[in-house]
Image (tube, rainbow, N blue to C red; front, side):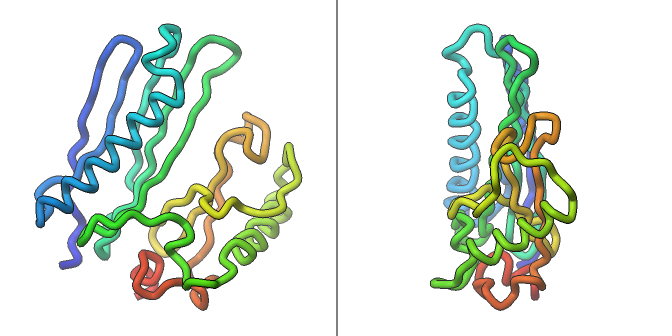
Length: 199
């Protein structure tokens, strides 16, 4: 079973909220589908809450998602929320979720690598090189990624990214650093999502 899973888009339209979010459909066993969909909805709700909706009556939110990977029993997607509550500009937040569609396991960044491997050092070095190469002016010195840095999987790449203002000025938006699985294959957990992309 290596088919992409079926994804349905749900829309919630309320006062000051325009929300699109994904749900997995027709996935067996049903418990796996339920776990994945529950995790997505929980993340959607957490993001709304973090952005002050509905607590702050001034907050206007529009939210959507992007599918990044849906193959080899791996589902990786990004939830993107734009909230505006006055001021010069609103703030966009992005969170990504990566699942094994056979058992609903959700993967944090560390879960993609062999236990004990210095994935933080390796990824940080690659990102440092890309920052120099792309000549990105930083707000803060980049020393290292967080152990739970935001990421998604797209095709044969691990894409590590940073929230607005985390590294650079607002005008630069989200900073994405695509890293080919072949550049880090010696530390990849073979049975994890990146290992499957190598196959």
